[in-house]
Length: 87
Image (cartoon, rainbow, N blue to C red):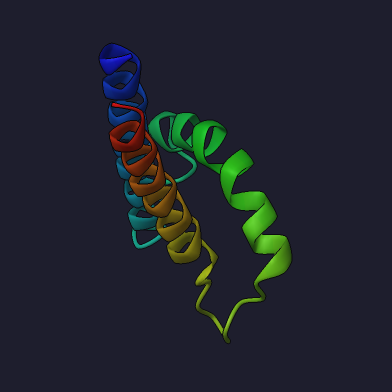
């Protein structure tokens, strides 16, 4: 059980960083069109898409990735609480 929790916790942590790096790529022109950017887009966009449908952009600022990262972090914290309750 401890190994499973560790794997899930690490996966959430790594995926959070994938999202952050993908978001930061928008600051550099053409970065998302690179092969690295396309790989990150394939990993990040399926998770970000539902948040973009719900949360409209504020002018030119898209806050849906911030909300998505917060949800992911809350899920990780909830997973940790669940693990502590089970042990």
